[in-house]
Image (tube, rainbow, N blue to C red):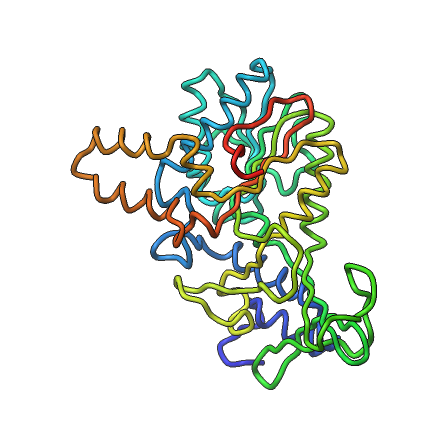
Length: 358
C-alpha cells in the first residue's frame, strides 16, 4: 500500500490502485468516475482557496443574467404555474441565489431543486437555499409542471471514454499502474469504434473521445422537457463539431496538472460535445438554440448595462466590476472558451441571446 494511505479511509488513488491490482487496467471512464466522485464528496473545490472559480463566483451579474433569461422565457410562455427551477451540480448555490433574485422581480418564483450528491456542497447550498429540495439524479424531479434546468459546468465533469487507433485496429484507452504511478495504456483486445467504421484514414495514435454518461443524461433530460415543457440551459467549455484528440485535463490549486497525478485530489474534466447533445435533443423534437459564445450571449442580454448600473451604485467597486465583466466576456478569458446552448420544448418561445450564434 502506498505511503500515507490508510485502509480505513481509502483515497480515490487507493481504490483505483486496488481495483487495477485485482482486475488489471480499467477503462478511462471508470478512472474518471471514481476520481471525481471522491473529489466532490470530500471538499468544496470552489473559490480562490479551492482549485477553480466558476462564473457565478466571479460576479453576481452572471446569475442575474441567467435569471432574466429564464424569466423572459417564462413570461413569453404565459407565466405557466407549477414551474420548477432545477440546477445540476449547483456548486455553492450562488448562481441559483442570484438568478432567483432576478426572476422574482418579474413575478417568477419557482420551487428550487438541486441535483447534487456531494454532502459538502449540499451543506453550502443549504445556507443560501434552506427551502430547496435535493435529488441524487433527475428521476424523482416533480412531474407537475415545466422545468427550468440550468447546467453550468456540469457536463464537463462527467466521465469520458477514449478509443485509440493502432496497427491492430481500435483500442479502448485504459488506466494501468506503472510502479506507483497511473498511466494511460491502450487495451490489449480490439474495441469497436464508437463512431462506427474502420480505422482507415486515421493515423496510429489518433484518439476519439465520447461520453456515454453525458449521452444518458442528455437523453433523460430531453425526455423530461418533451413531456413537461420548459428549457435546459447548458453553459460549459466544449466543441461544436466532431473532432479527434484527448480533451481530458485536471486542475489543482488553479494550475493544470496531469490527469493521472492525483486522482481524487484534482478536478478532472473534459470538453463537452455540444454537437452530440444537440442531436440528442433534436431526436426528441426539441428546439436547439446555439451554441453561442458566452461573452456574446451575456452581452446580448445586457451584462454591460448591468455592470454600468452596479458601478453607478458602488463607484468604489468600479475596478472590481470591470475586471469581473472582462473575465466573463473577454475573448481571451471565458468569453470565447465557454459555449451556451439552450434546449427548449417545441411549444415554448424561441429564447433570447442566440440570433447571432445560429
